[in-house]
Image (cartoon, rainbow, N blue to C red; front, top):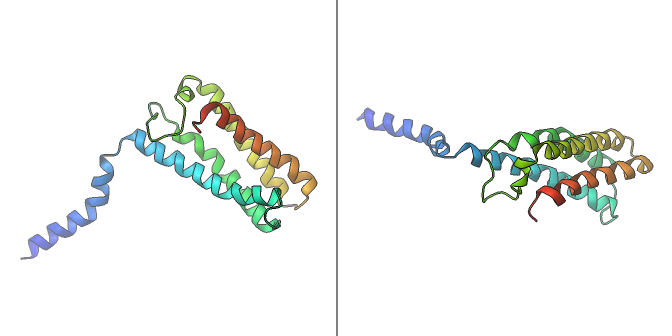
Length: 149
């Protein structure tokens, strides 16, 4: 009587691992990079609203979100593994044929987000404004070239 319970328990424990085993590395890479970009979008959204004065400026939230972006931006490139162009991705296929330029643009995102995070701590809008514009330009440069809108 105990054997069926043991087998059932083992199967329940292994089910998540078995269901993920069918996911290809390309699918996992797409999921990963979409997660990273979701985090970036979640954090830049309120900062955009503050910069446009659609939402009251909150130094602490702005600095926290800028710091999060600086921490996460370097992770994005990891999700662009070879052969991970799939129909579930907004990434244009030319990423893989122009990887050096794509990497350069991703480095620009890393740099811009780190620079914004450094000045965001001060609350000095004279410093924050230009660094925020640089971040926006870094995002736009990559989106224009490598993202299906």
